[in-house]
Length: 157
Image (cartoon, rainbow, N blue to C red; front, side, top):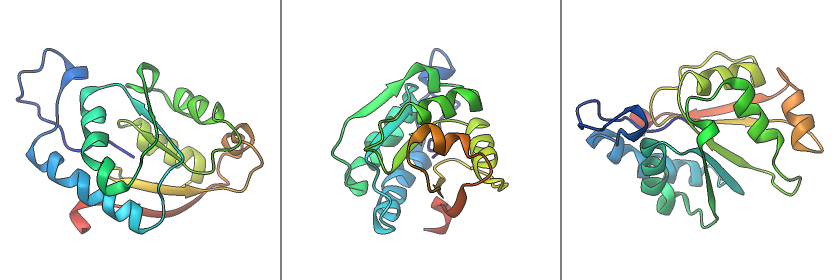
């Protein structure tokens, strides 16, 4: 998932601290509710530690119905595809569904590397990718074998 729409005129001291704008704040609960309706509630959430990703998840958490911990990670802020893939590969085998919340271009590039699909990941879009694998390292190594099941776009809700 990519973070919701952020504010460029907030007066934040740097890019890492930019908050969401009004549209971004409105989109979060809608996307969370749709993700839950589709049965995509994750077992674990890995997120960039930027203000806009923190706020995105905070504003969608209740409608998503997620009660677990969120791992806010600096390495997912402006991460490379390899860094995002490594975060997924490090998940324990008991995790069946993971939500990785970050930024572009990583969101689009990771989706493409894993599934071969080319999708625009506009703000607050969530993509469900599926793969059959015994463990996360094997799943991440199966590049191109993942299936893009669906993309949730806030403008369509």
